[in-house]
Image (cartoon, rainbow, N blue to C red; front, side, top):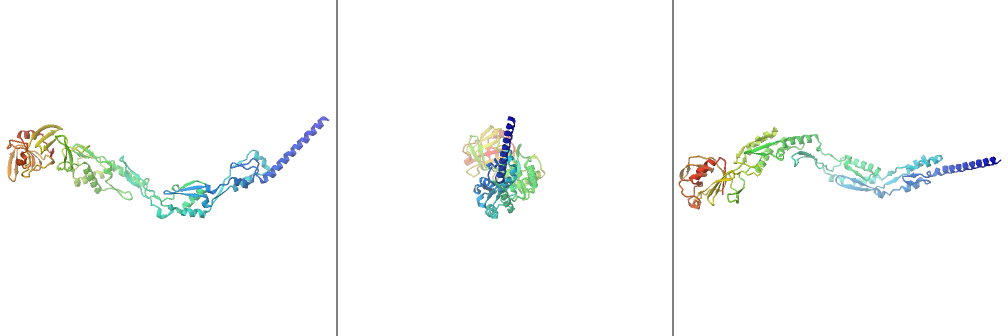
Length: 462
């Protein structure tokens, strides 16, 4: 009897529990018909027991908080969501979630209850177009045409193509609207017009095949090794000088211009030639003096040499040779441009002294008599070179004829020679009883100088 009673209690309890479960389930079905499953989380919002409108309200975004930067090459513009009546709504996806939550399956909320929904974006397209149309960057009057690449020589001697100004010309205006709309639809905070392919591209860029071919040719020319011999010294043409001989057309055709070769030679001459230039010279007394009257030095024959250099460049020759000179010095220092060197004769008119240096060593000096000042026959100051030497010789002029043993002219009819008819040299003799312009020397000194003198040797008179 006790067992029957216990069994009955258990059965009643189970029935009661089942009733409760059924009631809870039915309540859940009724509840879930209108509301989200209990425990539902949507985009971080606790949506359980709430309607879609509630979640929509919680996910609301103020359009004024949305800004997008439209970046052109020349300017950046900002569009605010409120300006285009921007609206965002999650309702479409929120309803889908609610539809997916079948009331009779509400118990599933115990296992999966988190959802991610996307928003639907709308805005006034007419307002957007109006704003975009007001961008100064889209005004044709403000647009700048793109520039073609330029061919430039770098400091390292290498020729490169450098892209020009890309310009600001928009070729497809309608595409601007499209890319901005796409950016707004994706809620991007910026859109770069540069990345959209809307800009007009230059006819030639650094990557154009013709430009690359031009660069290759220019490097061939700029890389030539052409050297001129000034005596024994080699003076190279620099890459910028060789590059300067090339004429490049607007469409990157190349040609060696003979006129540019001549202009380059003229510049090369100004840099390296020494003829008729003012010099600074440290004299025997260790004083720096300026020599302005120059009939000595190196001078390229521009007219003749233009053809030879043009041929070298056109045929891409690496060559070391002596150019055609109109004048040549006795020596040359490529680093300093000095063409006097260490072997020269020096005449001090005030002191009436002559000094002869050989390899920078003074090996001879003597008193001399120069041109007579009273008769306006003064010996001209300047720098000259020995024309030749002769022994013996007869010096002739309008009113004289003199026999000398050693004759070393350096300025036309003016030169060094012995003057056996004089018993004294130096002092102030040249004021009233000087020569016709020559430098008179004692016989023994002229005899000593003669074998040392070489054709072309510099003579400095001051």
